[in-house]
Length: 270
Image (cartoon, rainbow, N blue to C red; front, side, top):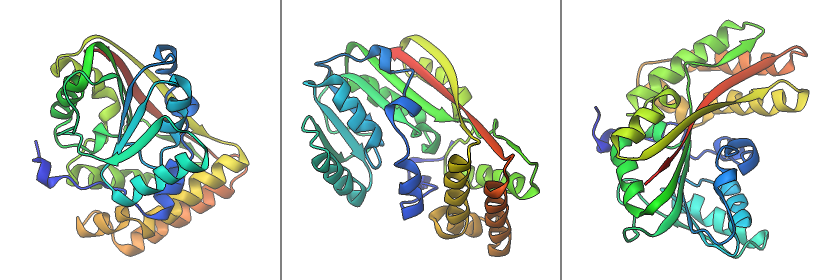
C-alpha cells in the first residue's frame, strides 16, 4: 500500500470542485446516519469541505456541538463564513489530519466522514484514529462512492474514457476508487463492532441535475487538479480530456440522459 506521503487529493480545490461539493446535504448524502442523531450529541465531521453537510448535522444535534475538519485552510475559512452567514452557532471548522486528529481520546459521540476514505492510502489507520476519538459505544458513519458502479445513458464513449482515467488517476494518487464496497472490511479491521453496511445512489436525470453534474465534470475534466494529475500520470492527454469534457456537455444536453453511481455506507460502534 502507498505511504501517506504519496497521497494527493485527486480533485483539488478548484471552484468547480467546491461547487460540486456544495450540492451535498445531510439529506442527499448522509441519510443512513440521520436515525442515529439526536439533540445534544458531539459530532466530528472529517473532510468537511465547504460545510454544507456539516451545517445540517449541527442543526440536527443542537444544542450539541459539531466540529468540521479539512486539510485546506481556505476551505475551512469559507466553511466558517458559511456557518456565520447561516447563523449556525454550534459548529466550528478547523484544519486537521485524518491520521492524527487533534482531540483527546473519547471526545465525540459521532464521527462522520463523507467521500474521504477513498482518497487515503491507509484508510484502516484513519479509521483507528476515528475510533480513538469516539466515546465507548460511539457511532462511526462513513460513506464513499464506488467507481466500479457508474451507469449512464446514452452510451457515450467519452464518459467511458472519463471513468477509466478517473480510476487510474485515483489509484496513482494513493487512493482506492472502489472504496464503497470495502468500507465494512476496513471498519472491521480497524476494530469497530456492530458494523452495518448499506448502499445508496446518486442519480442525475432531470434537466437541472444533468446540467449541474455534466457541466461540473466538463469543467473539472480540463481545469481542476484531476486534469493535471491525469496528464502528469500519463493517464490522458489534454486532447483526451477535452474530448471527455465535450462528452459530458453532450450528455448533459441529451433529454434522455441518465447517470447513477452507487455509494457504500457503514454505521459501526466504537
